[in-house]
Each structure stands twice: as C-alpha cells, then as structure tokens.
Amino acid sequence: MRFTLMQHWSRPLLILGIAMSLLISGCSTTRVDTYRDIQPKLDLRDYFDGEVIAWGVLQNWRGQMTRYFTVHMVATWEGNVLTLEERFDYNDGETDERTWAITQLEDGRYVGDAGDIVGKASGQAAGNALNWRYTLALPVDGKVYNIHFDDWMWQLNDEILVNRAVMKKFGFKVAELSIFFQKKPSAEGSQ
Image (cartoon, rainbow, N blue to C red; front, side, top):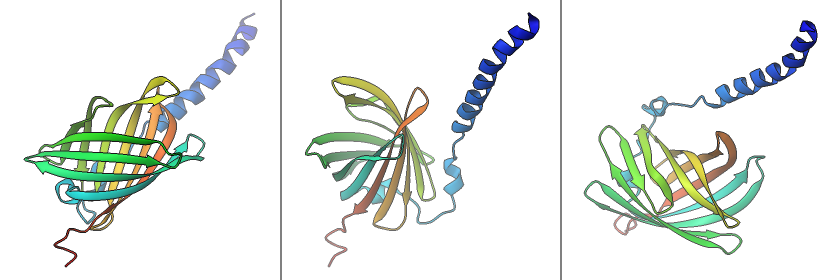
C-alpha cells in the first residue's frame, strides 16, 4: 500500500515542482541599474515636453498581434509634475483617452496616476531606461480586469523612445505591448 500511495503522489508532486520552477524563473527581472551607463540619458522632463506621437501593437500571450494603434500625446510640466494627455486611435475605429499626472522625485524615481490606474504607478530611471510598474483597470467585454504592467522604456536618440510592456494577471502573462515614440521637433529646432 505504501508503494502505491507514493506512486499516486509522485506525479502531482513532479507537476507542482515543474510549475514552481517555471513560476520562480518567470519572476526574475532586469534591474534598471543595468542601464545606468548607457547613453543618451533618458530625461522625462526633456523628452516629454510638447507633442509626441507613438505607434503600438498589442500581442496576446501567444505572440499574435491582436490590435494596433496610434497615440497622440501632449506633455506639459508644472514644477516637478508632468501632465501627459494621451489619445489612442485603434485600427478597429475605437478611441480612448488617458491623462497621466506623473511626479518626478529624487534619484530618478517617479510616481503617477491616471483615472484607470489602480493605486499609484511607480517608476525608476537610470541611463537610457525607465522601468514603470502599475495596475490598469482594463474593461473587456463588459467586465473590468486589473492587469499588472511591467513597462520598460529605452531612449535611443533625441527623438526615438521604445516601450515594451508585459501585462500579467495572477502572475501569468496575458499580453505584450510594444510602442514606438517619436518626439516632434520644437518650432525652435526646426528653423
């Protein structure tokens, strides 16, 4: 009987062990300090000042593109607070708007909120990178789901910023988001 009971439990224990290994390995993340020496230095105050346009794609957990969009942004600063007004135009005709209030703290840290953000967003910048984490209340088919975003931005030059976000629910990846930003040159710079 003892041998049979051990056989009965060995398979579930093996499956649990594999699942725990995958879960633990999925929790490892890159630290923003990894990018501290990479140039150009990402300065949100400089990059997000005026008009910015972006293009993005949303992929499901399988990697299939499910939507694409354009984002028009207007960024203004008052003291250490950035107001970032975003208008999303999706390929299926849907539109959406979000207004962020992002406060610049010391040591490259940021906190922010918007109408559909649960709690506060928090970010840390170093070198050309910003890691931004938040939970978004996302409406889907009449229901609202709280989706955790692990959002990374990298500035490539004065005009281009690349953004990649992994979206998770209960610790499992449900989607990925890639956005490519282009800062519009100021009127002074284009003369």
